[in-house]
Image (cartoon, rainbow, N blue to C red):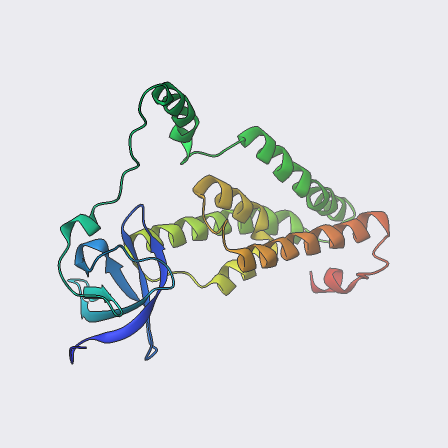
Length: 239
């Protein structure tokens, strides 16, 4: 291993866009890596142990200037940096393959938008009714303000986090996103997840997110149907 090389692990890798992030074994900040600096016999993937030379770009961002998979040669293989294409079907399968490819053209778009908007509306019904009831009973105006304002903030933070991920900039902490969701921004977060296709595949993140959604549903169900028998008036006192 060269003196200037460091060891690390590919924490995540976007093969479609040809970039990812390295977690150095020695600790410290993650290092951005682009496919253009990869050497070896194959493309990297998440979890791979790698050897890399760290540097900084013109903006001062940490990035790898050279990367090879641990235990593999550092020979330049230009074909590795070209995303593999699926073999073209032949004979009678061509028409079938073309027909099957049509639905995939909209992969970047929101799938089943009507159904998902209905689910979002259903999830928002209890909080909306509860907030309106609190307003009518002159208990507090805050719930009616927190949900739309928190949702707008949540959507903006999701958009910014995805943009940062695509451009290799510093990400927004997941705990920050969850705090905004807990404070009433979960409807906007749910809309952003589906519209931006962001954070939808991280199981642990989704478990925490849906726990927050369920917590809000239980609170308002108790307030509306059970007169606050379980949650009591503690939140009313805060607001």
